[in-house]
Amino acid sequence: MHAAIAACNLLYMIDYKLLKACAKNDRKSQFLLYKESYSLLMSIAFRYKSNKEDAEDLVNQGFHKILKNVGSFVSKEHPIGKFMPWMSRVMINSTIDAYRKNVKRSNLMSNTQEIQEHMHAANYNEIEEQIEAHHLQNMLENLSEIQRKIFNLFAIDGYGHDEIAQMLGVPVGTSKWHLSSARKSLQSMLNEFIKENEKITQS
Image (tube, rainbow, N blue to C red):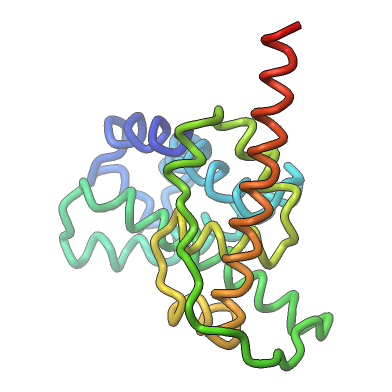
């Protein structure tokens, strides 16, 4: 929800003149682009990192890659309306790259046994309709890091399990299993949230 608002505001602020100046390494233009896109990039980062400092690190890494590739976007003369989706995709890919590097560094990823293929997709819209954005964010923060990443990539960012498996370096079945586990955990938290609200309403 917050990302959608930030994206709408961003469309009014960004134009090709600014992007061309950024591609030419004009510092003032780059700072302006950072300032105007910060809210959108942070809304993405917060879906993957609950700590503000860690989220800001992701934003800085992602924005560096955006600046590095903005010249390519400009040279291909894409419609300006496609800049926000393009920037969001660069940010998401940067976040996943950072995750994969951390996994390799700490050797956390291990071989996983085969898991059943048929899992129900997470119904993010139903959950979102029943709770406010900040409650959903709190619930996502209670998931494990791998569950939160897979849920975000699949249910919010629209990636398929084959793509997620390739991004994170895990079997497709593992991606599906973590998605199913995330969905069950969120549903359980949602049920508790509803019960607590009912108690408050009845008291």
